Length: 423
Ligand SMILES: CSCC[C@H](NC=O)C(=O)O
Ligand SMILES: [Zn+2]
Ligand SMILES: [Zn+2]
Image 1 (cartoon, rainbow, N blue to C red):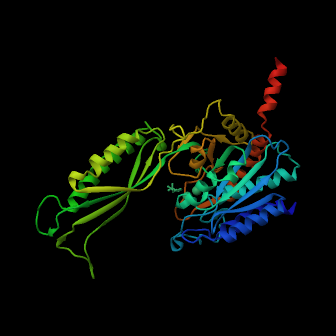
Image 2 (cartoon, protein in one colour):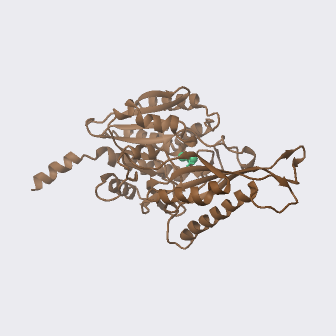
Image 3 (cartoon, rainbow, N blue to C red):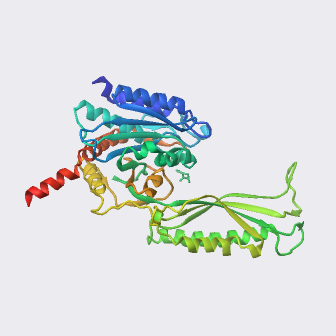
């Protein structure tokens, strides 16, 4: 009973939050040890898989009574983005609970909450003597925040994963400001674009055409007009955030350095800018590629471009990698009902505006739903003062108890038998 007291549940969450798994040097050893010890206390089979040295993935297993049925994958990433300690009201790795009950920590929303909530829900279900029909896997993966190439990507392609016979993947979502939980069936693809202009260098007092700066700024003007057109669609209520192309300038690089800053009377011969572009699954990628080549980095304006990251978010057959939300996907309705049974409400399915590890599973044809049970909370992912209220965290555990129960008990064969009897 003391294991499941509220203060112990919160203290386990705090312990996980206190492990510094922030980039660029995440302490994966400590997080793996912690998760393995949690698994032991829950009598879950545990395995640490190092597909890349120093980047362990912890895989836990609760074997079902019908292990031949496709399994449930409860997925989370253990790494977190860096935090600027001095800009926080409470240190980002202290997991301080303020007088209101807010737990402040990097990872409290993204997404150590979810990983621990899976574990706490399993703890409760085990205490009640619940027996899953389907096998349940809990995967705690590294590397998500830097692209997932050494985490989810390698894992999804590994023999280990292929042999798990996974039927559904649950991964992270986003907080909502009202009392509806958000759920995501797809996500935008990241295109990280760097454009470079070269041009005639010259005296800072001369008004001539075709300098690198002028060449680059013309592109930036065009990019900003396009950005505004996309942003206006959202402001007018015509499109959701995940349904437009977003493009944001993330760096500008040029100038001739001097001991006091930059040389002020010299027009440089090179200039560069970087953009984080996110492309919806059904966007016309060819026309966007044309726009980049012909308007944003045209060779006739002495420009070139490279992609630091470019994914298409398609499956093997070339179709957008999206998870179905209609009756062809039983997992969606099961999620909706399970959330409702636990006293929650699910909003309408959305496209995740950024990227998650779910894309690697979707592109292989696995259904994957992005869901974090965080309602009535501002979205503070990657922000200062990321927090989660302890009551919201505890409510989320109840939500997962309900989801895991429904998912692990779902037996499509059983349903077929029943309908045959009814005939
Ligand atoms: C493109 S890989 C980076 C993944 C990262 N995920 C969460 O923020 C993102 O920027 O969306
Ligand atoms: Zn995340
Ligand atoms: Zn993140």
